Length: 197
Image (cartoon, rainbow, N blue to C red; front, side):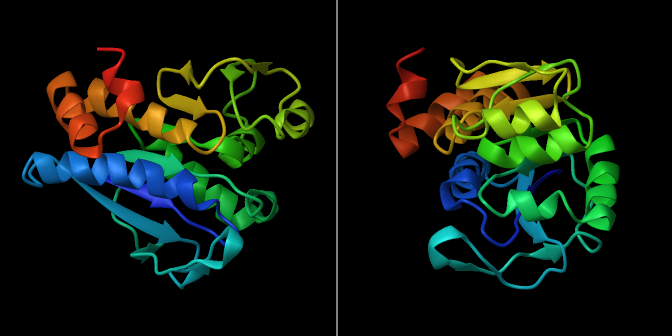
């Protein structure tokens, strides 16, 4: 059973994590929950408040979360605070190093950038974050026209908010098969993915 972890923090953008959560959880449901499990975690496991005030209860803390095979790092204004927490960033880096892939959504790219994981690599992010990323990753290659980018063999970045859904479908297909991805898109009625098939 593979584990997909989604990192949550205060002032996270709702659709940044809810979009990927829906794609992967529906995919798990349609495969009878046999192949992979999805969970959320935050720094301390306590309730977080998203941008615009939605309260969310994570399943685990960073320390108590089970081993993570695949990691989703969303964005939002709170990403500016996450990158200032050196201990938390170190723990995240240790988690990322053990994943088969890690994806960022929107300004979640800041976290990967500060960790040095985008140095000299292509990336994309929310259109309002490119100036910030130019300071964080001066050696990176911004791809402003792309919905998502494969930065290296285990690192993926997506543009703003809804682009996280597109990248999630890409990785659902790459990791668990096109058949399941198509079934998931049909169930969700997500035409942008289906129209490419």
